[in-house]
Picture 1 (cartoon, one colour):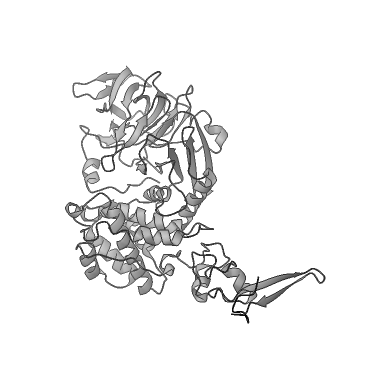
Picture 2 (picture 1 turned 60 degrees about the horizontal axis):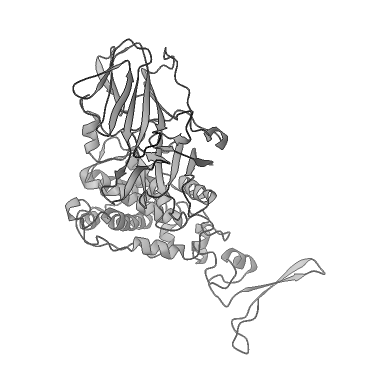
Length: 525
């Protein structure tokens, strides 16, 4: 499945740019590694045959290596297998890369390298500068320390299709371009579709809902949570987010220091995308960076200028909400959710007008609150039968630019009523917004999920007045499901089951603790 990722409208301009300029690019992984043993030496992929029998017009295989006794740069060798209908091939020499070796390519005055038309397997090796800081948050986003590297190299190219008589660009969706990545056979590391890690690592995988999730843990990374917990959280997110746009493989990297705190998703080609999260990030409580970056892999819409806020807002909102749905959730997680959504940053900002944002976090904070409120409005309008996820899914399915008007129209269609006046006040206007207080506003769609592990689905929790994210609503030491089975009130701390083992008869005797005894105290349980 090849699809456009969530980007601002400027991406549309880049997508139709001429061969004289190339947008940010990624690379495509073609091997789905089934187990950890296959990853031990990196994701090695055999180079394609010279006659290109794959059916692709161009097969690009990029092999990554560290530079010995140096830091800050890595080597990327791009090898090409060219089909018979390709009349020209151009490789870009970006400002962050310098060609150190070329076979079958010649340099042009404009800095690009062109295929000589005769070499059957032309190749070019670039020394790529890795270290880059985050423009929005500061700190290193990509780094090569000399011992290890986490990088997002640019490997774009263009070719001339002799039959169609036009240029074809690698960053555009095209079934006739096959892009592969690998780590050199003498190297340790893992090459994903758009992120490459070089250095010692361990890896694990889990089969989630209709996709595989891989976790790459560099030797230098100390995870705040164990890998099984991280994969469990991402697996729940995979199941809970029913918004379409699901990649068959997602690769998550744990980012060691000196990478900045937080994370980043990197655009890939085809049906794969990578992201990294700082190793010290908690996988269990809101705000959850692991889920936040995962949500970005589920965004396939193209956002117009007035809707640019939706990318981070939707990632922030669902990162917080899905965190409390991972069973069994931890104590006070719902309060952390409320605190996260209650962040008042940018309370009076206009989301559609970036110039009104007082800081970078406005779409995360106010945007998240807006989506929480809209989710509640949709649930109320449809008696809980639909949620914001339906809007998210339709935006992913939309063929064209997501404008403010498109968003308002989709929202009205999903909920059955117009929210235009509300949107004009809180999104196009600067009116503050508060998220819903009821915990039922954040339960999984359908009501059949047990988030707190007490044996009750969200629908049963609502029917019995118990908290859907707290296993023991009345804090009497007995979970809600057990109390209902024994006939006591899970919302009353003075109504507690007394369970005694009748070893003589092999039965369990149940009694209900009285509200108070003669001494005004509670009976022992």
